[in-house]
Length: 211
Picture: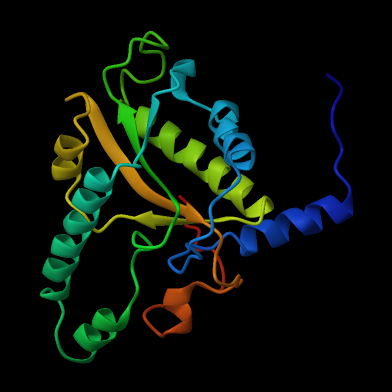
């Protein structure tokens, strides 16, 4: 394949795509076209993985029982997290919407198979966590592809990963990377919601140290 040179317009659009990626928590309940979802999930197969191990394991959470268990898991962890704040920060935290689990039409639990034989251990001997980083890379490509299709993703990290793994009856060798809500956002923004509500702000520039 010849070297691919991208146009200025492409680079501008790609920059916009990254700016509009955003972690979504407010979803419409409209169903997602399965063909579109499949195209987005195919982005996993384009992701880099250490030793070509492809350690990602994707569970589509659809049953009423599985979704109820995941939601209860989040609600319990969220209440515990709230207890860790006080004063104005606790009040602000209590007002945050931190998951779209009650609205998002598609919900996925993505795991890393730490014991996979694929890749024959190449690149993971000294840094076995590279398998998990590989899954995160795949999720990032999936996230961008969803946004390019007019969809959004919300990454739910406020939950007990071991409890979720038990509830979903997955292998003991799998480690949760994230619980993901997917659907059509109520709105798009180039500013993180946490920044808009005053929880935290972004750095204006990337801090880089030199040794």
